Length: 485
Ligand code: CS2
Image 1 (cartoon, rainbow, N blue to C red):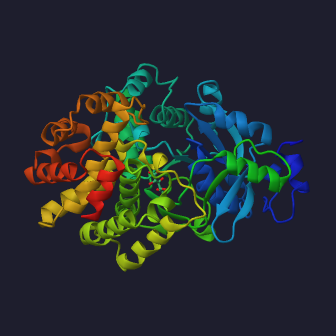
Image 2: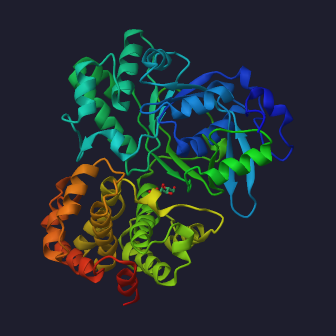
Image 3: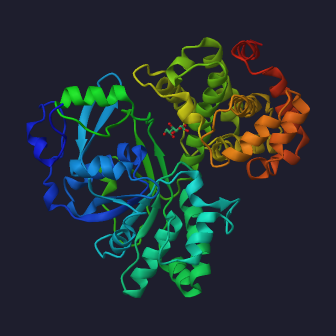
């Protein structure tokens, strides 16, 4: 392919490729985004691209903390990249909202300067569950990243350290703070982030912590759009249709939702004009999404991976597995979800199932299986706790928990490295399993950061054990049998 997607190439793109409808050179950076991965680029950056059509002050500086890959791919493209919308009416759109890309490890001063820029009024984050460095509800002060950053708060490495260093600089300069907006798939994400930031700041400087508590807004937000990882097929399709190369296009389903708590301390774009729902209380949306979309997703991932199925759509085309997931949603989860007022759970479930079935989306189960130690508690274990408190049955809910254990066991025994912040511990537990349900389940349930306090409840322990036995030796045939029972 002869040339690369960049600002100069925009005018020559084929007419059916949607491109920025505003003058990019006239935009200014008003948002710093930490964690500029595929999800951010397929979701928030697209809403911001729409915002820029009428408000030029909200362009994005995208910061990566751990890898230079995104910067190195997109900088030569002037920050431009292609979004492929998958589904019945597939389309390609070039997104222009990211005007600057920084790799923090090599460009710490530039990141800190940007955070202290008065034009920057919002810092958004997608750093995944593990980026919050929490142990339970509190900041994990023994976390290596936190230990490092607290020892040199002016030269941080982690997201919390950067957010606080930027706020400290602004306070010193008598500038108003920025809003800190979490876009991670976590319940109460803004509250969690606020707690981590304030507890960290407390260790750096109590006056700073008090100022943050009084002045900084940490709205919660709920994000939803299925975003399969970029693969070669996408790169090729984009190159053919654009007639130039894009080093890192992203893809997602057409459906997208962003619900944001309307609490900003230093202005905001008119998000409501670009399809964002602003709400005073988003906890209900959050819970419904994590419990009714992400939990079944994880169930498909672990059961499907054991059955050697590759994608969500293939899992949904496997009748025993699809039937189980439908039952899990209707009978296991819906009775235990306190949903927002006016929420129609039946319609929500049907819409999610249709999204899962979409054959145009190659969403790999292994991508969803990543980070299980972080995902299980917020997706499944909360529902199980609520079900136990209400005296509801939990057998359906415990099958995916047992499937995760079997999955970890199989990966460990096959010597496959898990993608999980607890990978080493999990590999040890997985290798130590013997196939005896009592011993194996006890080993997993001893992982307190995942299973406490549920593991103290005999009803839970028994139900997981029964589910683990049901899955037999975790081979495809055994799982098939378990689901057909
Ligand atoms: C998925 C989510 O990878 C996963 O764990 O469950 O990324 C899911 O696709 C999104 O939350 C949908 O909004």
